[in-house]
Amino acid sequence: MPDEPGTLHRAAEIIKSYRGNINRIQYDRRIDPATVFFEVTATPATYSQMKEDLHAIGYLQETLPTLGFLRFSIYLPHEPGSLFDLLTYITGAGANIAYIDFDDQRCSSGKVTISLNVEETAIVESLLDRLKSRYRLEIIEYDTTGERLDDTVFYVRFAQAVRGLIGTAEDEFLLSFLQDVNHIVQELNSLGQDPREVFESILATGRTLKNTTKDRFYADVQRIRLSDDVEVFCFQMPGGGNIFLLRAPDETVMIDTGYGIYHEDAVRMFQHYGLGDLTRINRIYITHADADHCGAGGLFAAKAYTHTGSLAIIRQANRAYGSRSEASILEEVYTTVINLFSHFSAPEDLELFPDEPIGTRSIFPILARFTVHDIEFEVLESLGGHMHGQVYLFSPDHGIIFTADTLINFGSLDEDRKRYNSLADFLVTSVNVDSECARQERKALLELVRETDEELALHGRRCLVACGHGAVSVLSDGRLEAVGPIERYQAREVRGS
Image (tube, rainbow, N blue to C red; front, side, top):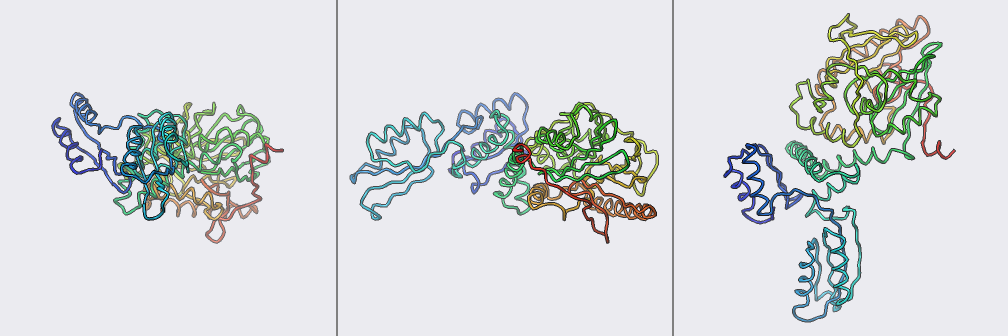
């Protein structure tokens, strides 16, 4: 909408004339002086008429032009009307001036510096040709990526940055995505957060994932023997949660899948560690429905086992579904954002754990049991502190518990992982949908680990804590400490060798 008095009122008048109900409106000229977000409820017929009227006056944004940035200097003759003539050329080319600087007292050369936001490369070339034929011209900068656009077209610039992260995307999709992102900005702004930091955190999330794939992919790896025949591998991914593989003589069992965007890199890593091709992985156990724990599930042919709540969250595309935070717009939109950037691929061949418990362990219902060769696991149902439907996998006899995101060895995370994890904390204010419940679960799990340690001490063994993030650890004086050697896998070095 034009940045001038009365334009907002004119839009509201059109909406009112068709009995539209404005559910949400957000405008902040500090971010983008020409963009207003409306969410309106109307009947299908009046909705179409409303759009036609808004379109007719040029208010309705239905496309996202690919804008470029051009900065140049021109030396004008010192005579009346010379600046007017220059501006006539620029206006005729359909370019939007973002910056202009001229002061006749500063120098006698008549130098004018101008920055333009331009929509089509052909227009730029035509304009420059016309200017070169008449003026002395110096091009300072010409960028077609959108990164140098000024803030008068902030949302267009942001959309182009998103397009660069996810590849080709239709304008309709990006406009819908901008609406969702704006809703996060509005909500966090009401909580006192800087809108610029919100936008940057969203882009930083996408950039981190994209920039840690292929040759820049890495992982921290632990190998620990659980029995004579079963070995567990822990792969700490660059962003997001761990992937665990239990290698047995007749199969390999996966616990959590990591992000979809890391799938090809992870498979190459598995092969590097002698875990064979994917045909050996015929079972996947998913602890919960966050994208960093199940987002590559659909890329494996193996059957996936999970909680009914996890399936519901995947279908609803809202990580807070089933919790008292279910109505949180932050949780819902963050799910959309992270699923997009991480290439979320939902598991297709799913088997659900039973709803009725078969026993209890501490405060947690036991939903099922399964074995990996000679190791029996209990499936413990969480109370829903981190997320509805989260489960833990516990083997008391062999002393290992997969705690999902209830227990995390933060001290073992490198600075890059800490920085990445902080982005989600900022965008949803807390990664736990019920913080009080999460504290209760954490306390109960630590006590369960301590009790198991006491029982295993008679055999000179410890209870291993396989955290959702960070190193496999043991409990020492109430703190988690990493066990065994940890090696760094670097895709670039492996390919180079």
